[in-house]
Length: 62
Image: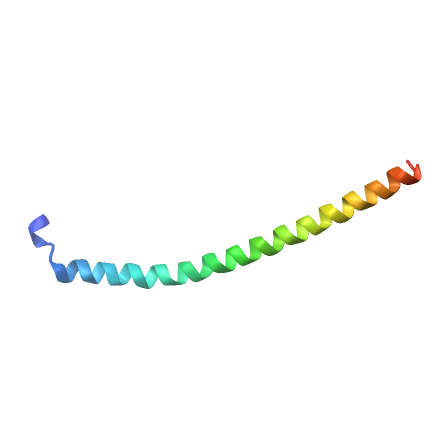
């Protein structure tokens, strides 16, 4: 069966893989951008929450 493998067949499969991988790379870039945005929002939320807790603690309000 290995005798039937030709350079043309390998090249055809590699081209098909390249066609499939390209869109996946774009999708992963979009996912990374979205994840970075979520991290930034979460960091801002946590910072604001910590500031509110600090203000409450310093005011003596339970």
